[in-house]
Image 1 (cartoon, helix red, strand yellow):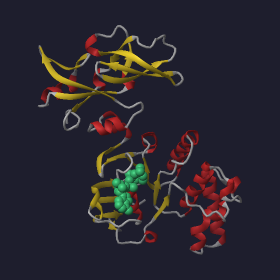
Image 2 (image 1 turned 90 degrees about the vertical axis):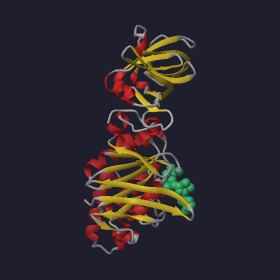
Image 3 (image 1 turned 60 degrees about the vertical axis):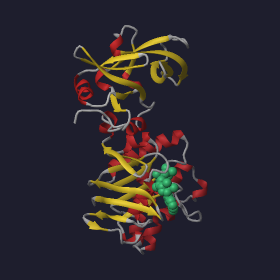
Image 4 (image 1 turned 180 degrees about the horizontal axis):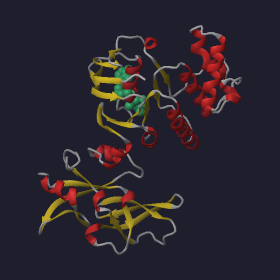
Length: 365
Ligand SMILES: Nc1ncnc2c1ncn2[C@@H]1O[C@H](COP(=O)(O)OP(=O)(O)OP(=O)(O)O)[C@@H](O)[C@H]1O
Ligand SMILES: [Mg+2]
């Protein structure tokens, strides 16, 4: 499989610069997900790789060779778009085999390829249907099969699941994860959905405002986000943020805010002590807050429950902690009333600290 490298990619539309020097290296057979909010430059990056947008500055290398001067058809890639772009007058088999027939491949080869990829995405029983007689999910699979049939080394997806309802999305996400294990291709997948990114990616690239904020494995980004943006973007429900100040008392390091005083430990205490700025933001994920009436006050948040959202085995509670809102999760069977004050233990090594001004994470290197 080819390796792909983006070297200081810059994109300008007239005077407006929308990508400010994207540096990215994708290893062999890697599933890379570009994720970020609307307008951050994900599609533009992908379209430059595909050759559908000019590169203003910088270069794209595939297997070490520059490709930005090549036409899309001369790049070894296949793309699946959000709207699938199927040919309505052709049946599924004809849609899948379109590129092969255009290239005048032998009939037997075309037939075998259609069978192979249709099998792979579960379309064998639908080969003679037209797209109009398929569900959204099935159409999506045709688009995928058509791209797979091209046998390119690089596979590009731009929000391929975004037109589907939540259940189908989940189902296809799982199928896609399975498929990506079976087919050996470099995949670049664009989405604004952090759950898709977390579940599919070998490597997540978080983008914001035309910059890469952080890249790495889902676990690395979840556990050690480099800034408040990445911390708040990945994870559901999102990380809680509370304003606080670093204070040292009798050798201990605390982060103190409106309604809480948390004693930091180990690496967190060291990093906070070494940091010159005292105004910080404390970040705590809902999953790191555990209901515990007995928790010591320097290891806990005391919360007033405002709203309880029943979502099944777990309820999501929106609470107030001093001036800040805090989301926690709690077993739905636990008796609890709105307006009640509850204590939640914090796992000390799981807290995150951010410089309030720069919003960069405060952590030991
Ligand atoms: N043809 C164009 N001319 C001018 N500006 C453009 C053009 N295409 C995109 N942009 C701008 O470039 C920026 C990045 O757009 P892009 O489509 O890459 O975002 P995205 O991350 O894919 O967002 P979304 O999640 O909404 O699809 C946006 O601010 C957009 O307005
Ligand atoms: Mg887009």
